[in-house]
Length: 286
Ligand code: HEM
Image 1 (spheres, rainbow, N blue to C red):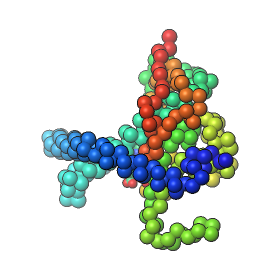
Image 2: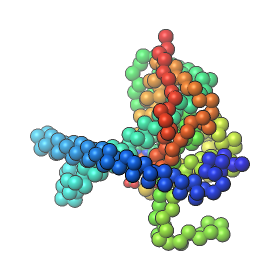
Image 3: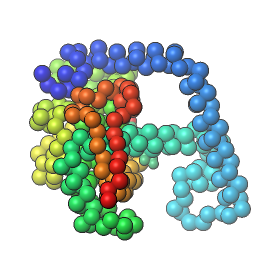
């Protein structure tokens, strides 16, 4: 059976429905604590916006390269303070949960594949060294490390689905997706489709060698989604993850008790994580 189908069960809609019901149950069970946490986050983002507004009054920033928050504050005529803090929250959550999960998965996969971890270590030591602070110019040299992160986001995409509203009828094969429908694009299934990814459950960073990338349609790999509304932070995300992976792997050995991704019990709903604590251990290198 195709790996994606195996993951979803025979019927992908049944898989998605099950996921939604699971989340609904979690929301009902943890409703109050979720509500309290959301309130805390709202307060945090509005206090950050207020703080920055006062700072800007004291020390105005000049020039066109304003940060996202400064740009919103400078156009107070367009952004109501409550909208500003909501936008800030979207940014903070979209940036942290995703990157955190991607890193947790990457380290766990490296723990499961010591030979691949050793190659990352060798690349980091050769290109940067053990103690040199990592600078932006080092990052393009970490080609193998980048392949590892890309492959990790293929096999375990931190955002496992994206949603779209259809604004005109779309014909795909013998199926019509009608205008007005909402659809979920299941990234996890796409990333494990054996038509594009032979032996899809194998963790193989060399799938991202330039000659391998050229063999498949680019849209079959969408960890940051696709099209005009894709992830706005994708370049920064790759840079920050390369810095973290390089810095951790040159200082620590990572291990995991999992032998394959099937040992990781996942829960999937927009973002993906393990149901229980992830098994990933770090021990200092001598
Ligand atoms: C591994 C890290 C990340 C992954 C896998 C990821 C993935 C995604 C995906 C799949 C979307 C949905 C886009 C769509 O609906 O088509 C998204 C949206 C978004 N991401 Fe990321 N992201 C990551 C890191 C970041 C970072 C670091 C930032 C900010 C610095 C960021 C900011 C955003 C924002 C603001 C949106 C909403 C865009 C919009 O629809 O207006 N993301 N991301």
